[in-house]
Amino acid sequence: MTERAIPDSSALNGWRKSSYSGNEGGSCVEVIDHHPAGVPVRDSKSLGGPALVFPRSVWSTFVAGLKG
Image (cartoon, rainbow, N blue to C red; front, side, top):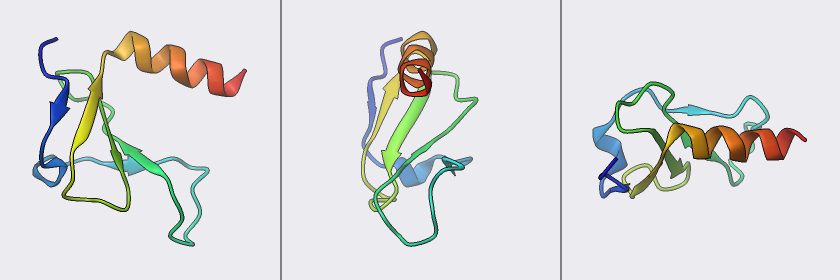
């Protein structure tokens, strides 16, 4: 994977917030599940800001660590 960041994340469709995120407008991240380059991640407060793209294996390890 060569793409590590997307400068304008609003150009992508399919963003979702964690089911643990509330509606209070607090800090949370959004991800896209089926992007061909990996897993894009962005700050939900900066919809037009950049997104970081993680390899699927790295993202899976991160999520497993949070659950563990």
